[in-house]
Length: 299
Image (cartoon, rainbow, N blue to C red):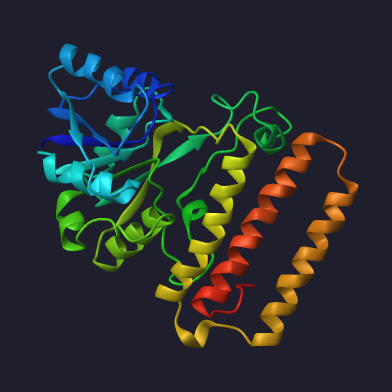
């Protein structure tokens, strides 16, 4: 059974070599390919990728120029892919040894497999990550399948674009990623796949090194977008009877702001400041989403 690893790429010249090197060192018995979907990169990404294409016959690069966004790039990548199993990862992370084999073996019994992540390896100088490591200085990881479950209806497993595998039949059944979404498109994809019957699992031995956005401004924009699109996902999937009352939900929302401001006033470390600001950006995005989609905040 052939596998296709699909990577959406936009301006990743500084990171994609590390990801491709890690992928090319994967040991797997099945025939497989790597497809990089260039999504209008205007840096030196294409030249970096072409150097791999020339050296490795199972690496291909295709144009995904018609529309900006990872959803479009992934969909175009699938159209060019030959595999019966589709594996997705990003151009700025790095897969650990055994990652691909673990995802592949998980699909012998299941239809959709998500991986664990390590937030330390690639983020030694990132403010936020220093606060997220445990007392034993280890990285945070999504250790169980339940760690991936959505806290809001439909309470299904959260699928992240940074690393998962799925049988092609389910991708085609749900017509791929929703290209109208600029964030949360991977979560939406996972929800629709599971609603269509895909059985999810955690490939515990599939570990991926996750890279945070290095620039503070980029991190804030990312988390604001997460907040907004989390509301959109609730709008799409949460039954009306599951929503709570207007006053109760908005009171809890503003109490949350008060707690965040109190935390900010007590903050003395720049790492903690970054974490507070990240949470604030998410709450701002949540407010934008609630106003745009006419939905009360989630408790």
